[in-house]
Length: 357
Ligand code: NAD
Image 1 (cartoon, helix red, strand yellow):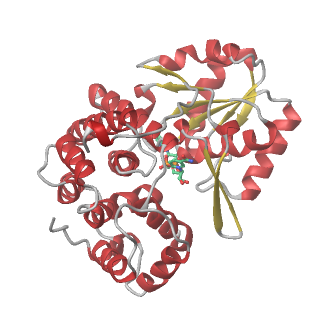
Image 2: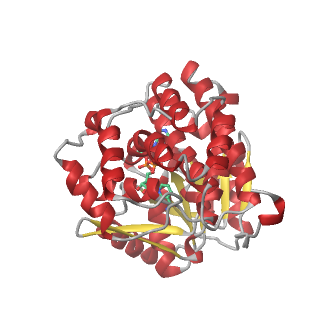
Image 3: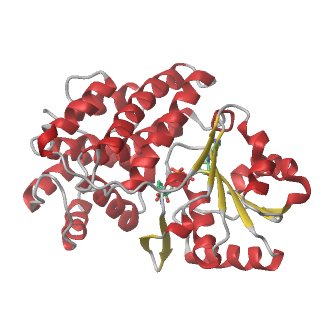
């Protein structure tokens, strides 16, 4: 696109980001800075230990820990957490964990408007978005509301050091997916494109480093830096075919979130290659490959991440069901959504075929 053709609208969202090793040590000051005195620490049962460290750092500023965060925020868990938070008179949520824990904080904030301080320990990016999701009767409903955007985000690479290597790889690919679709978003803008390309570059470098040595803190820091950038892109611009397909596959077949993103992304980019050449060039440049789609497939493979939906519980006979759901609501995508072409995309992703573009 030439500069003369460029038009865009960019509305920046408010956010305070504190980044760096050891930044968890600033938690108490950050709680005070949002005017809170009774912080409830949220986590999954698996991350209770990290949550306890956060609660200890808060001392009298903490009213307790709620360790009931679950994947996809089931409505019952949100109701329970809201009730618990109300009973303690909590005036702030400290969500320490991945997208599931931050999602629980958002479900509480949506009803109570208490501020969230997010302490992300994966690369999923939810902490930078005003998007929430709550699952009721097996259907995950998502929405946008500025009340759920965390007021402050503490990125401490030390906390991600315990994230298992496989989860780190798929979580990183999940983040790259936000940036890749942000590069061809209908409402994209040059600032987001800069962040997207830099975010993909940082993640690809960091993931290679973590794969080589799980405890490489420079690589962990690169990944978290990339996660911030890619999460910001997700929070500011609309997504397309890739996110729609992953939402369908996760919601209808209960496939694991980050793995699904990892497998589908190269195929969704192959689908959009003709329609979004500049975006593809930027993705390819950021990962050091000649093709965005094939390059991301190779990156996933090199990092030991899954590349076929059939390896994560998706059956061949599920393709038609997924197709029906994915085609049921029209949505914007750079390449028009055509049933036969989406069927082929799903089949390629199911088989784990390397994209040929
Ligand atoms: P997750 O939060 O479900 O975490 C997966 C598992 O890893 C959990 O058991 C968790 O406790 C554990 N874990 C997390 N960090 C760890 C660490 N450092 N060490 C050891 N264990 C750790 O996974 P996720 O991929 O971060 O989040 C997925 C969810 O987030 C999905 O429901 C997805 O829809 C949502 N999401 C939402 C947005 C948004 O903008 N609303 C964006 C991205 C993802």
